[in-house]
Length: 81
Image (cartoon, rainbow, N blue to C red; front, side, top):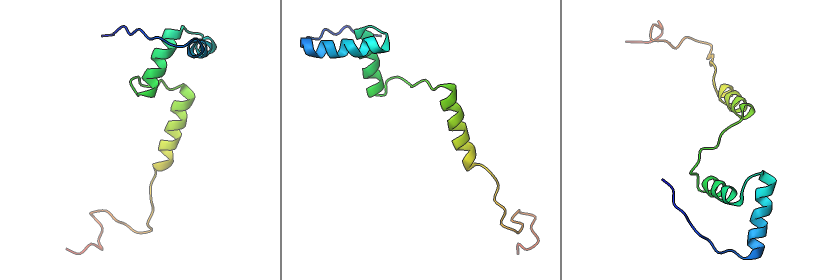
């Protein structure tokens, strides 16, 4: 569902928005809509493959095994019952 919103902006504000939209290569209305979605977290940011790989590497950094130098399993003979 979507709603139509009419805004009255000063010429200066509109020119600033128009300039940003031109840089992004999209219409002013699309730029405003996208900016609002990003600002308020309404749209999930699409990650690039490089960002996804960097996130995987950060995750893998936390994974691994710890060797305490002695057995710690349930079948450990040093566990007293």
